[in-house]
Image (cartoon, rainbow, N blue to C red; front, side, top):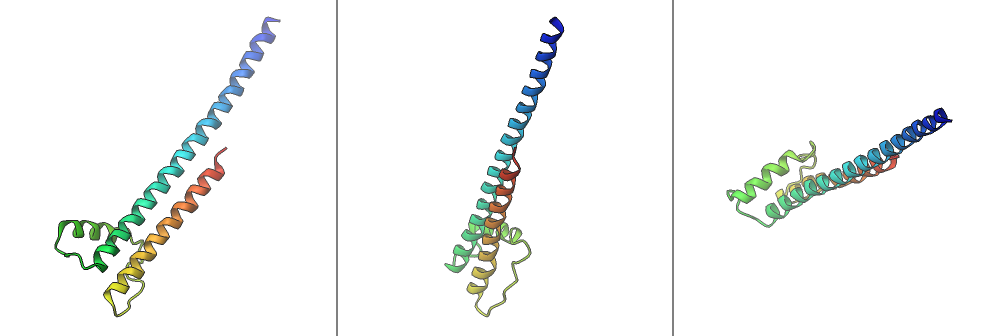
Length: 119
C-alpha cells in the first residue's frame, strides 16, 4: 500500500512537471511572439517616420532627421535601392515604404508561427 501511494505521487509529479513545462513553453513562445510583433512595428514606424521627414522636406542636417535616416538605412533589408524613379521623394516612398510593409509582414508571420507551435 505504501509503495502504491509513493508510485502515485511520483506519477502525479511527472504529470504536473509535464504540464508545467508545457505551460512555461506556451508562455515563453507567446511572449516571444509579442516581442517580435512589437519590434517589427517599431522598425516599420522608424521607416515611416523617415519617409515623412524626407518627403516633407525636413532639414537633412538636423539631428532628428539624421537619427531617423541612419536607423532607416539600417532597416531596409537590402531593398533601399530596389526602385530608382526619377523623383527622389517617390524613390524614398517606394523603397522605405516597401521595407516597412515587409517588416510588418515578417512580424505577423513569425508571431503567428510562434503562437501556432505553442503547446
